[in-house]
Length: 290
Image (cartoon, rainbow, N blue to C red; front, side, top):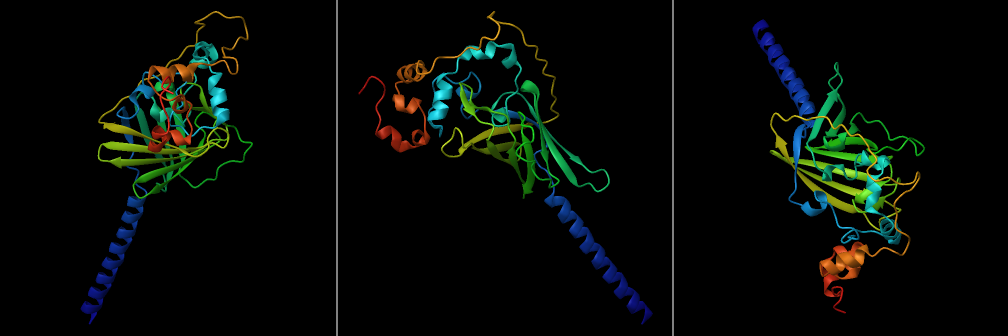
């Protein structure tokens, strides 16, 4: 009888230990971050826009409103020669479309091993972003706005989902198309082996008529490294103090020139949600063919 009781106790203890181990392993798996490491961007999407840079006046395919067009029409590329603009980092609404290695790492509580935050660092312009994973709320509307914003994240299976608020005014395309400081963004990072797809959705009640959705691809770099990004602003073009390059309202010809060069309808160059639809081209004619 004592032997049978001992066996039962051992079996029960083994079952409990197995159950506890299963719970612990399940908890660990559910909190596993698979996006860690060094990643290089894959420029198979929108190469000309992302690397050489977009044409001035090219607003095609973007769900912008008239305020966004007016703002972009007044933009002068020479603005980027001002010392104040030379070392500005990309905002997080654009940074993952840029160039340079991206590093992603995590920080866990040393005692509980609970995930506290995930950080990303993009080599180009030293764009450093913190994604809080510990459940903290976003701050109030009067909290400071920064280039990277305030980000909180969660894991949905193997997908890292991030919500960002408190962004400084930034840009959606590097030709004067702006985003306001009321912009919010949702990212999703999907990993497939050594490939990662970044999907992000931007909402801006000031300059967008509907959400702007974009995707970027990355490839894992084994034993990756990253260097510093020392940027030192300099006076490239001497100007009178306080001069800011800009184009007078209603004086820009950028969109017309872009449309003519690529034989597109001017309406397409001017952008808007409808210009992203295949039906749009059926009802429009290229510039000079009206």
